[in-house]
Every structure is written in C-alpha cells, then in structure tokens.
Length: 308
Image 1: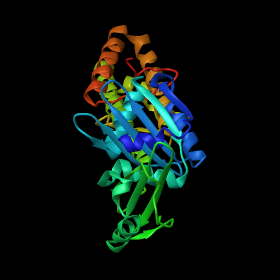
Image 2: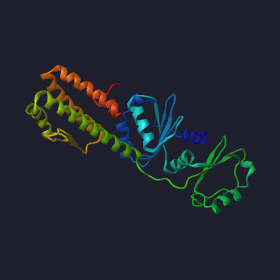
Image 3: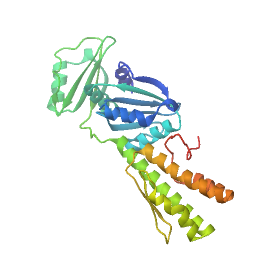
Image 4: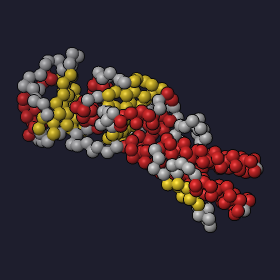
C-alpha cells in the first residue's frame, strides 16, 4: 500500500475525503460511465479501507481490507452499503490508462521485489532477466525527486528499459499476468435489483394473502387488481388462487426502488382507510422482512423503506 499511495497521492483528486452521506452514489456512477472515466475510488473509515478501480467507466476490480479481505462484488457491495448508510469518506482520483495499469499491478499483483536499492543492481542484467522469464507486470523506480515505471507483457516492455538508473532510489517489482475487465458495479446493480424485486414480490404476496383472509377475495381483488394496470415502469401480476405476486421491470435501480415505494404507499393508504391496525401490522411486517432479507434500500425522496 505504501507504493500504491505514493503514486496515487501525486494525482489531483476530483474530490477528497468527502463524507459518504454527501455523495449521490447513483449519479456519480452514471457520470463515470457516461464519461468513460478511468480512476480509483477510495473508501476509508475507522476500521476499513477499500478501493474500486475503474477503467473506461467499468469497475474492473474492488477490494476492502480489514481482518478479512473482500474482493470483487462482495467488496463493491460493502462499499456501496457504507455509502448508502452515510459511513466513511470517499476520494476519487482520475487517472490515465497507463497509470491505472501500474496502480493495479501494485494493488493486485504479486510483489517480487520491494525497495531494492537501485545502487545494488545492474540495470541491463536486471531488466534482461525479466525479459527472459517473460515477466508480466510493473517495475517501479522511485526516489525523493522522481518516479519512473516500466510495464511488461510476457517479457516485452511497453517503454524501453534503462541502461542506467539515477542513484539514491529504490526498485520494486510487481507481477500481474492479466486483468479481466468485468464491470463489478454493473454486476452489483443487477444483484441489488434482483434483491429488491424478490423482496417486493414477497411483500406484495404477503399483503395480498392478508387482505384475502381479512376481508375476502372480492375486497382483495378490488384493492390489488388495479396494480396490474399500474401506469409506470413496473409489470405487476397476481395469481388469484395463491396470491403470489410477480414483478418485472427493466428500470434502473434508483427508479425501480422509487416506483415500488409508490405502489406500496398507495396500497398502504387504502388499507389504512379501512383499518388502522391492519396498516400498522403491515408496516411492522415490512420492517422485519427488510431485516430478514438484508435489504438496504437505495435513498429516494420518499425513503419509505429506509430506517436511517
């Protein structure tokens, strides 16, 4: 991490140590995608440190460090939940495409040599040995005055290795064979959408059965069937025999959550007009289901399903 931060702190951040509660994560991610941005998102709090690496708008790697390391979608899920709950601070460093590869090798790769005294090696032999072994990764030289790096892919350097090195510096070598570019933010959003839809189906199914048992089939149909013709980005269907609910939607995460909140609020108002006690029990059931399903609802204007 020392080498990583040494390089990263030389980059001017777009924003630094921003309290997570002030960051609109959905808009920020949209902006990164729209602009095909490349850079590093850092998350820090008193216990955890994490990073999400972004290449051309795609989050290709994520890691959170504490007693147990989390990587990939698990790390993204942790960081996004922390942001949504307003925990920790966020810094974003925009980088060029070369630097993100160097930072990735340092953060993800296997360290072969750390802080070799540049005066103790023969540069031509050192770099020839890396070429002969078909090394892939990054060689980093740093001193108090300057920093240099060389990227290798199967023994071929992308920039010419040096014949001599400046004195009073240190060499570190990080091996990294390949980087698989998959968008972990997109995968996380897909998983979050799936959880929200599954939760909403369970909730509406339970409400439908309660209404049928409490006030009969006709009343349940009167209150629920209009939802099937709901004019919005949700397709809602009920099985009249079991009252199981099926929801389909291609809406983005934030707007999906917002629309489901509207449906729920509309249904809750109708129930409250009939009997306050039933509405209160419904709200308690909803809260318990959110806990059981481990759902952290995206922040919307309504915030019906959030317990901040």
